[in-house]
Amino acid sequence: MSLQCPSCQSRRIASLHSALRVGATVGTVGGALRGACGALAGGQAGASVGLVAGPAGSILGAISGAVLGGLAGGVGGCALGAELGRCLDRHVLANNLCLDCGYRFNQRFTQG
Ligand SMILES: [Zn+2]
Image 1 (cartoon, rainbow, N blue to C red):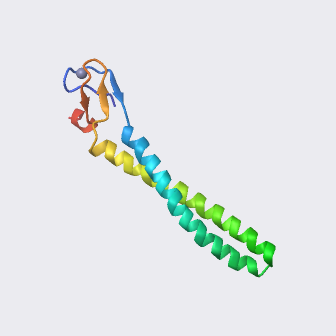
Image 2: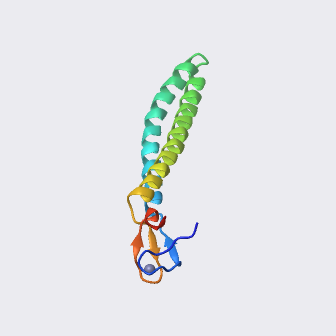
Image 3: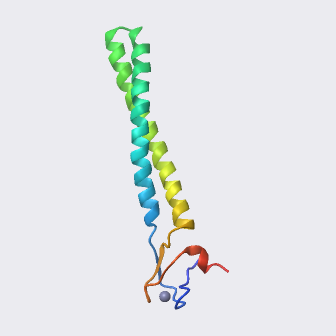
C-alpha cells in the first residue's frame, strides 16, 4: 500500500508511529509494576511451597516465583501497550508526514 499526501499528492511519506513506541513503553512499565505485584504473590506462594523442602527450598521458591511473576507481567504489559499504541496510531494521531510539504495526516484519510 502506497501513501499519498492529501495536500500535494506527493508519495514521499514518512510514517512516524510515535504512539506505538509510547504505548509499548507505557505498557512495559505498567506490566512491570503488575509483574512486581505478581512477583510478590508468586514469591509468597513459592516460599509456602518451598517450606516443605526446608529453609533453602523456601528461599529458592520465593526467588523463582518472583522472577517468573515479573517476567510474565512485563511481557504481557508490553504486548498490551503496543496494541494500545497501534490503536492510537490508527485512529487518533496523525502519524504520516509528507516530506515535500510537511503536511501531517492520518493513514485512513488517504484511502478511497
Ligand atoms: Zn504534501
